[in-house]
Length: 330
Image (cartoon, rainbow, N blue to C red):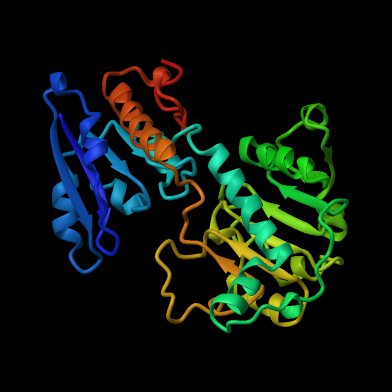
């Protein structure tokens, strides 16, 4: 059997660890395929006879899936699975796996770090001291006490719940919007479930933790920002495509929101030279690094490979998370 690791030509990464988790006794052939839009045929030639695919952010849409002649499974090295057309893969009988959990703590910590840095003006003070050589508390104005503020969490799954727990430790009131979570489950976390409009109009901070779907792509538009009465800080450590970036720029320019802490942008590989969010004192950007720790990096590689191997052996139910149900009801 052949396992192919897909790579993006603009972001080649070291996959030595991932390869090390593939069992030698399976007699696997291991290959790499670099996705280059200028040389797609070479890429397709490498993946077409793959039995299994491991990908991170290289997309597999219907046209790409059609080039897979005998693939049994695609394993995504992430918790989100928007990079693969899971419904079409299901039509083709290809299982699509994602990681169930490997970095909840790291992402929740990162969300709070972004929020705290914005609230306390950390980057502004840092630039004042380090670049301007000032020692001036008034370099940052309008700082509000965090205790007593309300944080609205959009998407109250594992990471959203972990953020809520951390926010409560800072004395914040926590509300959440999630149509897939019961009020009873939220109450166990001492969190009140509210409708989206209530969250938008009453929150001092809005933190985004949804999985990206067709329904919530460009979820946060100018019309949504206009509903944010309290001019909140926006935190996004989920997927960038949930925010309409041009509308966020307008919201920042017109003071509809106070600032933004973003670990993700619309593009997985944005051009920092042209990004309109760069250079703003009330915007903190990190390079999709919220997941990162040595522990999370190890688990990411291990679970991704284990998911694929189990599917290749026909043990679909043993995989951590088959998101399109292929093989689960055999």
